[in-house]
Length: 347
Image (tube, one colour):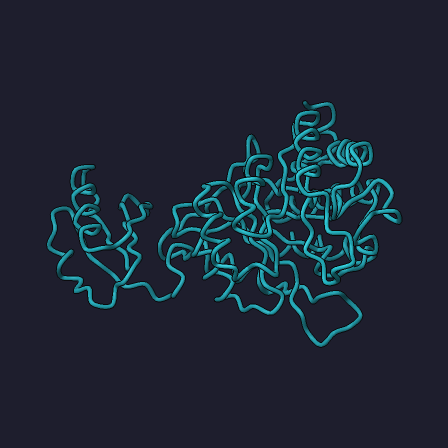
């Protein structure tokens, strides 16, 4: 439910309506549309009579929401949301490239990759310190040691860090080192983790569950938003289908659909969507053409020797070529993209 304030409503009017809604046990969330202040209401709305709020000073109308995801919906916030990670704006005019290895490895190896991807146009560095693996015998990550390596990379290169958090208990630790908390496909409906991520107010990269609908995806984002964190990035990383020649199937429909339904930025992960380095380039360009705000790509200075997901990891050289091509596609659809010419030498 949304309260639409009159164009002339002042701060006192808005504050009074907010306090009145909260006295009814509801949470309030503010946004704006064409000169109107919108007050989104969440909580138990079943027994609420809209007339209780309609007559308050400054209120133009009270309208129901047509979607179960309210704060993530364009009905609540028509204008696109941008998420700022240090000095990088995601969801604006620039297509943002995030790159790095699947797993954090040695400091020397990670620094070599980080310097390479930065020169090639990456704005954020990604790497997993905690790794959820299908097999309990696979490499599980370096944990806090890996987080410290990522922090050192940020200090040296200036690139913000994206890394995965696996449980609500780990949120304070990962938040201490990271700039963006990644919630992976297996945890998309881990509601305790979503709650904890929402409480941090930090940027969150939420990956779509491998067998989740768009509505389920946006409702998971709603959990984070409803805990007061507006900094949510939606990440399409492919869904599981009957196809066996690729790791997953990229749902390219989801990019324009999420843009139609939600105001949140949309990122695409072509590495996990395809599981094949030979397909990453083509799928990346398709995602940008479809309207994605950025890409998160697995890159390593020596892909064949990557500690995990080597088969879907591209080289720094391939990433540089891809970044240049993405810039062309971005320009064709009215967007911009950083190139290695713009980022080289920046600290």
